[in-house]
Amino acid sequence: MTQPNRAELLKLFEKNGTAWDRVCEKYREVRDTIEGNLVKALAKEHGVDKLVNEITALKTRLTSATEALRHAGVDVDGDGDFNLRYDAPRAWKNRIEEELDKKVGTNAQVLEQPFEHARLQLMMVATVKEAAAVIEPLLNFEVPVK
Image 1 (spheres, rainbow, N blue to C red):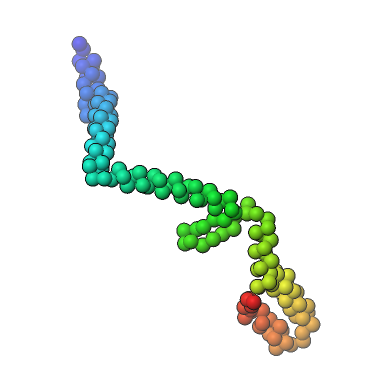
Image 2 (image 1 turned 180 degrees about the vertical axis):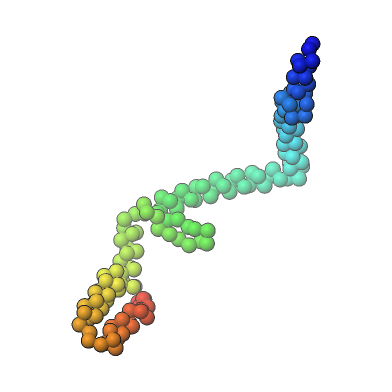
């Protein structure tokens, strides 16, 4: 064997060499598999496997309940607040829109008409005081809820 060949062969067996890396990978795979088996056995010894089964059952129930909510057209966020989904039944959307219109008014009633009226009045005012009287109610605007 020549010296250059010997040097190349030794490189394979150096730490972080090709052979070293292959052996390390096999060692880690076997070690990880055995560790997984030991954790599983220890967990069973202490009844943790029952908790895993319970969690699995709860996840199944959660998935089923979430799907039922979705079909109903409702989502619930992390804070427990209900939100109407974009694909909720049209009747639900219409009812909510009607109730909102009754309680706070329509966009036209609450925003468009008062601002259009103010714009028209501002074209007619002669003084800053008159302009302030037109603008002030809109700057201090609060949505009335019935």
